[in-house]
Length: 342
Image (cartoon, rainbow, N blue to C red):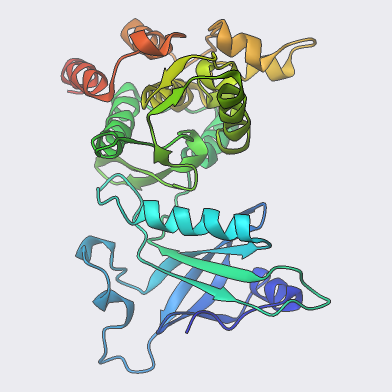
């Protein structure tokens, strides 16, 4: 059961090639590392079927569209050093398992195992999360490549990518109680390019997803929320109420709408509308966000329609109470698609 790899030397062998992992009863061969961050590593793997007549992991996958034709998947490996981290990983697994939507990356299988600490490594548990693989990378990866080539998404692709993100968030916000993703950003959006079709967009990484609605009724609760947001919500895409939370506030899923507006800007221009503050002498990212000091950057020629700029501005309302809900966003983006995607 679980995975046979443990220890720093074994991890290094996996990172630089070779090695097999077991996730419950299914065996996967490590092909290469796709990415890493903190104590998490993502690998491209290929399923090893001892008996080709048996279905392997496909027998566990409910949606056939997530079954790989060539046995390739992605595995996220998390090194867990303490009980707090273990609870966070278990919560990520629980929350990820709630969602079933074409624009939310599905968790196909998982295993959490205990390992024996040694001189080479200090972690006590390892988690393995299995996902479909999308080798075209994230919006962030695409933005970096496109910046070098001085390329931009077409207006049609911008709207179609954004519409898919809205659809995924609508699914999360539609729960009772609603769930917020809490870290919508280009680095958490997988993009798969398709010949003759708009790119497929999938929102991923539900490690920060939580029930969206919170009642803040004291300064202590406000500071606790801000501290949590600092750890779990990427700064350039974080809503103003998570930077400076009042002592009496009702927080809801519209924190995601702010991040969604920043992400629409980033689909167009490759960065958050506030990241410029990080490069300015004496600049303050927090002040730029709280005061909604958007800096429009140079775009394609001909430029994007002004209606897209107005759309971004509509989502970036500093007061969450007047910010639109996801249903309002979808109505508006569908109107833009009917106008600009012909």
